[in-house]
Image (cartoon, rainbow, N blue to C red; front, side, top):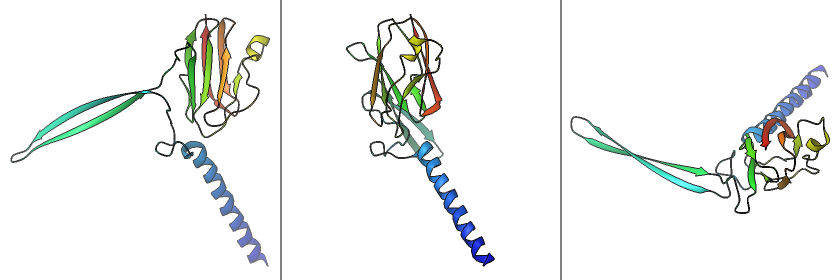
Length: 170
């Protein structure tokens, strides 16, 4: 009987470790439906810049040319309407530091497989609390806020509060 209890405990322990490993993997390396090529970042809009570099190596009887191609994608940070864009990825907000004029709108766009809910870290006064998002949004979810008060606005994702950002409004 004691042998069966040990076996059941071992099976439960292995199961708990497997579940914990699965959630850890999904949180840090998980592959969502729309970001299967790069599990960390999915950029919907952007401008690509391609750079090519050639390296020539000569040995005693053979010449080898090796080409390297690098593609860099720049994420747009402002729309034609003047709305600033902040993307939320698994690694945090991008950009996570922004300076804007009073009266400017900022659109937070969730590009991670986890939920996003913008929440002001400074809750001591009423106008900072206005930034708080009432509902969480999933992948491609959007939250837009117009900053009418000057000051430093520090925010986090309420569902993952290790990711921080700040907006300086002048």
